[in-house]
Image 1 (cartoon, rainbow, N blue to C red):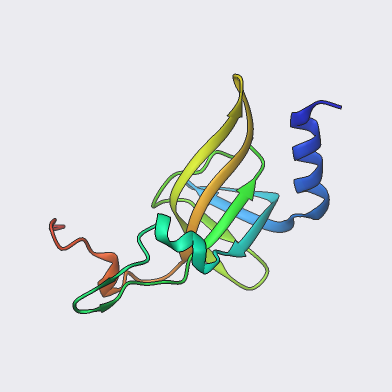
Image 2 (image 1 turned 30 degrees about the vertical axis):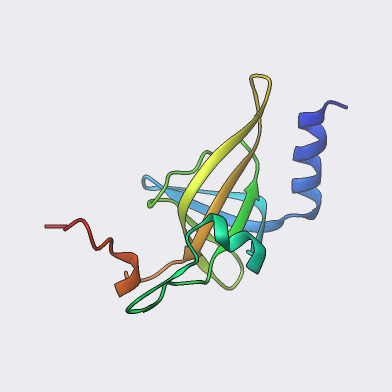
Length: 122
C-alpha cells in the first residue's frame, strides 16, 4: 500500500463526514476538522491589537487531495457547524498530492475583526 493510499484510507476511515461547497458545486467527503490549539495560534495571527481581540476561533482541516479548496470561498459543513476556508495548501510528496490542509473560521457575516484596517472594500 502506497503512502497516498494509506493517508486517504485513514482520512476515509476516521474522518468526519463533511460537505464542501464552492463555485456552485457541492460534494460529500470525509476530513478531520478540529479546533486549533493555543500553541498553533502564533502562526496564524492570533495576537491582540489595541481595539480588542482578533477572532480567535479557528479550526484545522485535513482532507483528501481530490477536493482542492479555495481561500475565502469554500464552505465546509460538518454535522452541526459551517466554516469558511481562510488559508489552504496542498501537501505533496514528490509530485503527488497527499492531502489538503486548511485553516477554517466559523461561517457567517463578516465581523469587525475580519476587515483589514489598511484596505477598503468599495
